[in-house]
Amino acid sequence: MTRVDLIIPTYNGSQLLRTCLHSLTASTLSDFHLTVFDDASTEPVEAVTKSVFPDAAVIRSEVNIGLSQGFNLAIESGIAEFVVLLNNDTEVTPTWLAELVACAERYAEAGSVASKLRLLSDRTRLHAAGDYYSVRGMPGNRGVWMEDVGQFDREEPVFSACGGAALYRRSALNAVRRANGQIFDERLFMYCEDVDLGWRLQRQGWPCVYAPRAVVYHALSATGGGSLASYYVTRNAWLVIARSIPCGVLAPYFRRVAAYHAGRVFRALRHIREPSARATLRGTCAGIGMSAFALLCRDRSAVSEQEKQRLRALLWESRPSSMAGE
Image 1 (cartoon, rainbow, N blue to C red):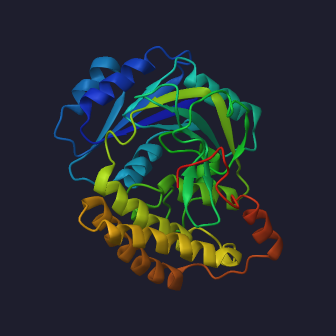
Image 2 (spheres, helix red, strand yellow; image 1 turned 180 degrees about the vertical axis):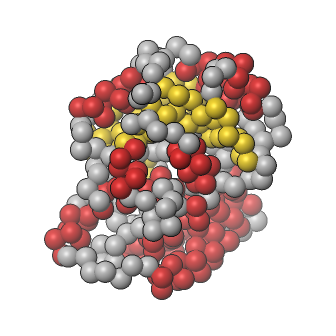
């Protein structure tokens, strides 16, 4: 049986996709099945895919359904032991996939493995060396924008993997499905869907390991970004707090969470003429409204103080000098 189901989502960006696919042809691990999810593109995604990987599967939606639902459809179409997600705006190194799988094999308890992402525009700088979640109620990328001088070359536990280049153990994904059967929360549409999944994996005892030799180059926000990202990141940050983090875990940090998110609103108001600022404000309003409803509907089962302490130990108390990205 094929070891890896490799899934690449795309919305147009056929030239980016072509570059990504060509980089995969040099992979030292060839035991993978490629699925490209086409989210209602107007460009010839299937033709581009088949020109490089004739045996690849292309799942197409005629309407734009979002990243989370697209991932779910693609994951359900496969049966491999490992599920690997890869952005279309990336170039992988030849040993990237082999390093992810080797790391997963060394850590059988790990539910996910995080890649090292460097910027495609400046290959000496980092985009993510695994992700973290802070006591301010916001995720971040370890080392983002920093020059990569070996400070993140240790294989070690991290909070979660950036979904732009991540491996998940299929058994772990099946273990943390939501009550409605979804692996990725489709309400999130796009952005923070990997953070939500990271919380569910950690809650169920499936840690994440960072594989520093699994290197990918990322053209940051080449497909998304801008006002779209501002809206969904802001909205979904609130939903993650309301739906993914057990009650009481962030309680000791209430003032820091409130201060941080209030500061985001204040900064957006100062730049109200800018589209991204207005998108942030819309995302805040939508997120608070949706979160209020989510809190009413969430599971109220008690979480022990010992479990709360375990989950709090996963949080960054402050943004370390070697970290950035919130």
